[in-house]
Image (cartoon, rainbow, N blue to C red; front, side, top):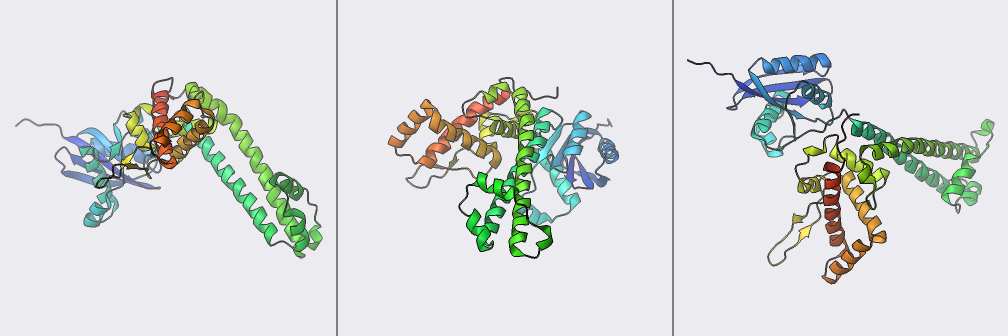
Length: 352
């Protein structure tokens, strides 16, 4: 009898230190499962193990944006088709239980069936560099906001003399005065002295974080302009908003199948909420919430400065739509415009 080459589909359940792989054939029969280390040597052994069963068609990997990023990058470098797998359905998990081999097999079956899959982002280009810089900037912004709140909370419970002096100051003056305190370190047991030391430390930390944010902005703005100049020219799109939208699309924006898919990714696709005689749509609470917030900021800017947007709001208000519904519609329109700029107008963010 003629011997036919087995077509193999792999599935990988990724973790910090180990990856568990499973292999199935085109009929869905399990060929085997094994565990490998999350390292370059482990990636090489995993790929060789999958190919030992026959012709490798594709590999479904969970968490290509987290623990599976290194494996997905390695497989793509070796011309292996990689698909991103969502976590197993909760109902299925209740029936089958949970273990690494079970999850790996579920990932392989999902890849074979094309169910709940997507094209993973490439993580070896300029957009990945931009994402790393934005992670540091976002952390600095959050910490600076926390420091401001801590200073104000500390003033609320400060001794009366310190509280009276600082409670009515504006933020800029408050930070300047607190950073300039010169308390005596020999009297650290005194509540007034200790409070001034704490306020000085927090104010100087706020100043250092501001300098760090400015330094990162000087790197992020030109990089965003370099990746996609057309995006930053749109009304309401600055370096921060453009950076978030570029990160959402990834280094390979062609993975976005359509502008409707991009709208769903950003959580601005209208969802039907009709019942009986009522025919309406509601807000989408899913998707990338950071991208959703970026589109929201664009809409807010255009509500104030763009004449076309003002005319649209006036017309839709007369039709009986609420402000929330109008903003939902505007975010959907902006998503369509952003999609075409990301995927058509000089938006290939490949490595230089």
